[in-house]
Length: 477
Image (spheres, rainbow, N blue to C red):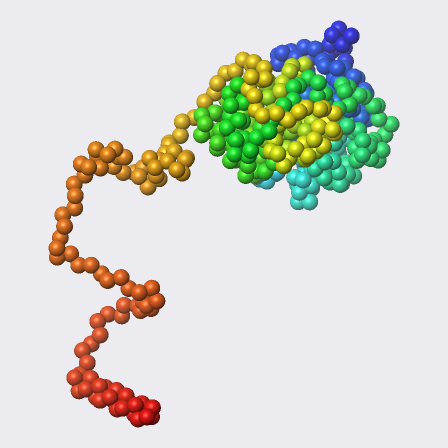
């Protein structure tokens, strides 16, 4: 039914239709067909749709059509997102489209210099994409005011609730105009998201697209038992067999360690976590999206809102916190009607926790040893790691491994022939050796040579010492 509908039929202007066609987007998705007409009318929207269903254009096109030109420091449209990566992704999609209407779009989030954001806001921003934390900082500094905002979009509202952003979001909504249009997109509409709908929306139009939960049927699940020492090797072999893979870890340190292990094994891999600067995070996402590496090792930062095509496999290097986190992690593969596999690397003490996660998700898969023959075949383009200067083997038991201190010695080699050919030092019989001082000896500062003392004084001191000693002997008797 939706194949016969075009963006023009939904009320989108011809300028934006031509801009979308230039990007190869001709037909709207289901969520866009359902939400764009009501958004163009200015109605409040409460939409439940899974990630990767085309939500950005679903709220972005009506927002661009209805946004008014803004004054410097007073934006008229606001989009709130939970993570920096999602904010940057939305900005990349809407910025070229908003320029067709002579509107300026800008994204503000943490990890970036305040000065750049101050300058952009002083020039004037019509559509502001922001994370709640940095936006409140800018409001407190007096750099921005939301009193002219008449369109607000809350994207990934359930994720913001999970991250504890509901109170900051409410503070931001209270700063906006009361007669605004509020558009809410979320994967679920329960708990705190329902409170947002009740308190901050006015007779919203409810739209539900796709299954209520992330479908586990479009992906194949594997639970492999192994010791922790084997995880890195198994992970490397899975990536070689399956191609583009996202590996989820629990900690930042674990993410960096696994990234180093995969790079040492010759695989091009990028890491993504909250401890990196924004430039490093953008560079990692760009390289993975553009196919410049085979694996992205990440914490749960990348588990929501990041839409990357062609991910064949998701590896749970560390078990997720609960079933909900398992679904959103696994949802990075098998998107847009494609298929994918999900592999969980489990240690024996973790079986009880993982069994509980399986019950929450609604799957029942046995725990088995790793078996690569069970994995499906994928068309894999191998991407090797960039060559780095080697400082020898990483195996500490390898006696032939190199050492950092030898890298600047061109004449010294590890060959036995060169060792034997080295000239021996000539032994010098007149060589003086310093006696090793006892450890308890107090090392006094060098104060130069002492002047020669008179012999009379020395004799006087000797006599005094003799008298003292004789007196001590008498007292003892």
